Image (tube, rainbow over all chains, first blue to last red):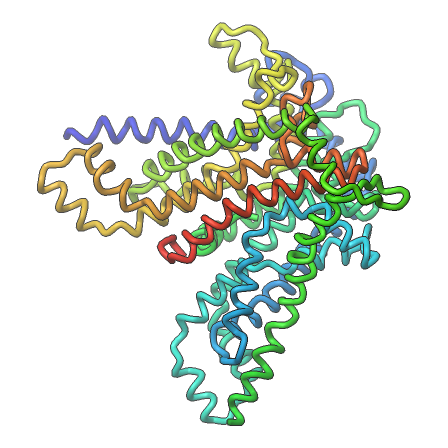
Length: 273
Length: 290
């Protein structure tokens, strides 16, 4: 009986907080369907009476927004696939294969974790310029692939694998690539898919690096597209927010479908890009 | 014997692609950062060796000092606030009762979204006739300039950053809380400990590895804040929201003073590497939920 008021109070607090948390996202969507007349009203219109879709049409008409989305999708997908492939190979090598120099190489890999990405922004720009990758997909994709954290995590995961599986396979005369692709990769599907969700979102949302490496409008990613929205418009905020809504739709879809996996991956990784 | 050679060959073969990438895109830039900082270089023309003059100039650059002070101030406010809010959220949603999953998802959702898009909606809400001013008018407060004020802008940015961050650390704290064995709580209940005592004498001490991890990670993130500043204020008004990374970006990529920008970057590098070093020590102790 004593617990009851506390219980209700807790739900009250939770609900209040939930409203605060969800409101900006609601407001983004609602403002994006407002007409020029409604968007400048004060007090603000909570539920638009004359919703319009033309703001969304303008996003795609005034700037090549579809192109931006495809750019982002392409970059995020390629980085995710390549990173998972390379990281799992490197991690397997560091966790399960024995060769001279392995400890030193592991130390080298893990030391790069300490390098803050924003502090190497300028020299990284020079490196990419040296390769002639300014304003290219390569410039967006290739520097985003190598990252010690993915290697570190997968290595931890592989260290805990039972040895027997590999030993049995070795006795059957399986080569190392065979063991890796036929046994290790299939067993590590859960962690790989958790990391995939994470990598994809991190790259979809990435802003600072594309900002530095891209300056031609046609190469823009979605985040650059909304940050540097250059269309002509008479209803700037509504169109801007329509573009933002379109840009977060993939995140929302991924979040709704893979929410549990995403939470799990954060618990495993404990990191944010 | 044959197996050893096979392991040697494939060991290197599997590691090398990623290793080369790490060296070219992480190690080499770290070295270049320092070298470029010793040159006077404005993108056009030849770089001129200028020894440590870039570093000397930093200390007489009021905007750089202002940015550094802003960054320190910002981190010192952001880190504890983020800690308290995310831990409180985790404690609130910890018990598995009906409907709690929805609350958890709502608090967590914003962290999966783009910082640019979320910054824009907040920028819109911070406008003079925006939603924030509408809300505070209920409390009898007159219209505030918010992003247009040198006093308030940094706190507006803080709010957006917290909004994007607390749900994430809530999940981390939840993992840490779930690792604490239930027996401790049961035993303390028998001894007659109340909720507050249980928190101070069981939860808080046993959560120490997670807490340390969260504190260091958020300090690193607070110190490197960029996206929110770029979208919300562009460092203004009057440099009141300019931070170290933002000023570095501005110096190098807007003003094209690459050498001068690099000297800022290298100092940032030293500060953050020292911090990350401690983070890595925590990580390698293996006590964080991984």
